[in-house]
Every structure is written in structure tokens, then in C-alpha cells.
Image 1 (spheres, helix red, strand yellow):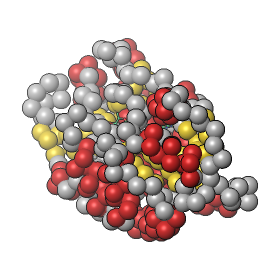
Image 2 (cartoon, rainbow, N blue to C red):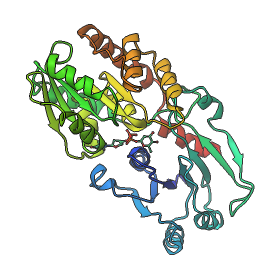
Image 3 (cartoon, helix red, strand yellow):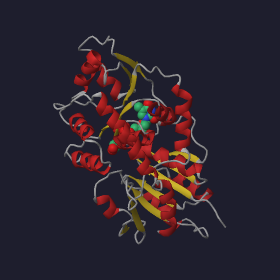
Image 4 (cartoon, helix red, strand yellow):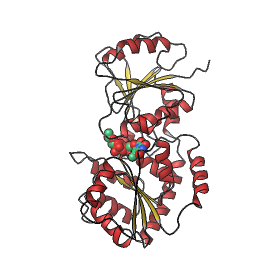
Length: 365
Ligand code: TRH
């Protein structure tokens, strides 16, 4: 019998949208491959704009402080769970675990519990990927929890990439090519509050980018606030900088925006991946951590993707105090373009994360 599995994915929103963004992409990718997904989430509010239409095969369920046992009992009775995913070490509630481990076993099912980690290009990822951990206490004592690390090499869990992505992107780009104004460079901006933002906007408003005017698409939320804070201090009208303020976009619209730009400024772990798949030059704002742990992570990423020196330097300035930020020349931008296509081609040769995950849960019960 070839039964599709029932997944229970637990997600806690810490801040921003990376946790929910990744969990939603994983859930929909699994569902599109015929799996059943229950996504338990403590704050689903961002899904109202990120995924207003929902997705067939994905049921979003509330995870309040202590999980509602009636809902859990009802769901597990209707369809026992095969795979349990703890996204980013979010700690599955005891009440849920107690019920999950004693639910009736299904024949030929692949019951597996795994902790999905954050994406990183650092070397520990290959070492730690697929490590088992024996649970020593609590309702699931005796069970094994597996660590699943997404990553950039065949020895890791891979990168999320739903089937058919490249074909959809290519036909979108072909259809939209003629609609573009070739005299302007279209740039998307999704960032935190980089110190260099004011200098970059000032540069574009005086000279444009690589000799061309910039059409800047500013995403909603923190990015728009950061840009407005800069513009409050000086006159924004300029021949070489035209700003469009975007509303909150669904993930599908967000992706299409990346496909349609000449340069994408992205942030966090989900959008950087989407920018990589878009195959256009990108600049990454890494999620800043108080202890500075993000800086080696950034270096590992730049190293792994073998980015050109001018792009390395730009990243270092964009992610620190911005003092050394040098606006890219037309030649730099051409280099970045070439690199973005080559990096994508190389990564496309590897199997995507969901395919690896599906094989993993069969092997590791
Ligand atoms: O929002 P982020 O900065 O998320 C962060 C990081 O992932 C960080 O590593 C993590 O620890 C922290 O969250 C908790 O950036 P990220 O990861 O790119 O997630 C943004 C998501 O929001 C992504 O799925 C794209 C989506 N998005 C839309 O769908 N529409 C929009 O209009 C915008 C602006 C974003």
C-alpha cells in the first residue's frame, strides 16, 4: 500500500517572517506532492497576506500557550500522524507528544520525529545533519529525534525548491520582458535597518545605479519604515530614483517581484533562497544576532557561493556599519549578474530539500 503520510509541523513565530515563511513553503511543497500537512502555529496572522488562498492539503491549526488537547485528540483520531517536525527547535508541547506517541500505529507508516534547523552554509551543517538524538525524558522518552539541516551541499538537507519552479519563472520572465522599461533598473528592497541605507538612497538619487535611473520597489513593514525614516531627512524627488511602495504581497507575488527585478535586496533565510532561484543579482541582509554570530554565517555563505570580490565587499559593508559601501559600477553589476546565473545553475544540479526529506523519513524511523 502506498499511503501518503500525515505530517504535523510545529512553528513558533519569533519575530519577522522567516519561521512562518519557511514552514509555509515546506507545508505547501509537501502537500503539492500528495502529503497531508497539519501546520500548528502560535501566530498565523502573517498568513493572511502571505498565503490568503491557503493550500489544498495544508490545515493550519492554532498552537496556543498550552495546546488545546481536544483539538489534538480529534485530529489524531481522524488521522494519526506519521512525521513530526519541530521547526527551528521550537519544542513540541508535552501534551501533544504524549498523545502522538501513543496514537495507534498505522501499518507501513514511517513514523519519524525531526528537528528542522535554520539554513546555513557553515561547516558544522554537514557534521550535524541527520544526527539522531535519543530522547531521555518526558512523554517521548526512548524515541529518537533526528536533526535535519538544510544546506548547500549534497551532504546536507538541501534547499527548498518546489517542482516546476524554474519553468514557471522562465515563462513569467519571457512574458514580462516586453512590458519592462529598458531605460531603468528595477531594484527590489527587503531589508532591516542597514546603516548604509541612507548613503545608498542618496547615491541612487544623485547618480542612479550603474549609470541608469533606479525604479525602487520598497516592500511593506520594516523596510518601508526604514526608507521613510531616511526620506524624512531629505527631499526624495529625483530624476534617478523612483520609489514604489508595495503592499504586503503573497509569497507567490513576492517571488514574481524577485523574478522581475534586475537586482534584489533580500533578508533572512527564506527570501535569500528565493533570490538565488530568481537568478538575478542579489544582496543579502543577514538576520542580525546580538552575539555577532551572523557575521561568520555571512562569510560562510559568501564563500560557499564563491561570490565575486566586489559583491563580497558590498555585503560586508551592507551588513555592518556601512562605512565602506562602494556603489557597484556597470561592470560590477555585470559580474554579479553572471555570478547569480552560474550559482543558480550549480545549485539546481542538487536534489531539493523536500525530496531529501521524503527519503529521510523513510530511512530514519
Ligand atoms: O522576515 P525575515 O527577516 O525572517 C527572519 C529570518 O529568516 C531569520 O533568520 C529568522 O531567524 C527570523 O525571521 C525569525 O526574512 P525571510 O526569512 O526572508 O522571511 C520573509 C518571508 O516573508 C518570506 O517567506 C517572504 C515573505 N514575504 C511575503 O510573502 N510578502 C511580502 O510582502 C514580504 C515583504 C515578505
